[in-house]
Image (tube, helix red, strand yellow):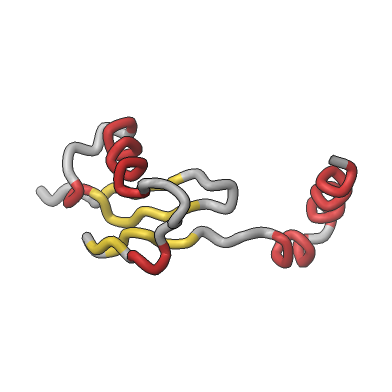
Amino acid sequence: MLWDYALNAVSYCFRFIKWLISVPPIPVVRCLKLLRRNTPRTFPFEDKLMCSLWQQEISSFGAMKLACTEGEGALTIMRRERQK
């Protein structure tokens, strides 16, 4: 815990260190395609993706623009803009 606290404190002061130790978001769905090589292999990813869609009230896979896994394991989903 001490190392984590120290790294967080130093990365808060120096953006370069934050850039070095942070994990960038990894796209897992782009342009309605599931990017299999970027999907985590430790759990059933499709189930987690569909659950996240349901929680964010996105009705279909086609309404999603992009989905990324964050460094801490969270799944971020961006919606498509609705056409008028």
